[in-house]
Image 1 (tube, rainbow, N blue to C red):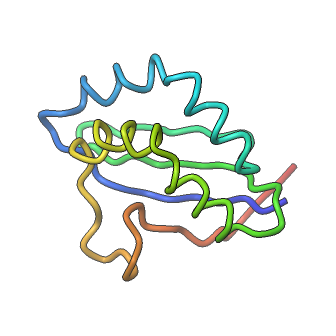
Image 2 (spheres, one colour):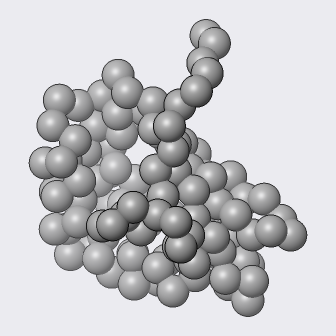
Length: 109
């Protein structure tokens, strides 16, 4: 299992919309996330800075393939069409990233 953290900004005028979307995530999206070997997924919001912090545990063996499966899903592409306009990616993110991935520096069970 691999713990993964990521961060992205949230457009100030989209905070309530983003919260509403995630208060009622479509069942197909929840199933897709699980089928891509992601567990214990949480998104946190820090206001007033409007930073989103995402955390999940990846239980698969081919992360790239699972992320490609997720990206190829038509229903997920529709979901992203609502979420992506709410988000404001960090300028310092790596090439090809939308959410900026973070390095784990500490863990305690």
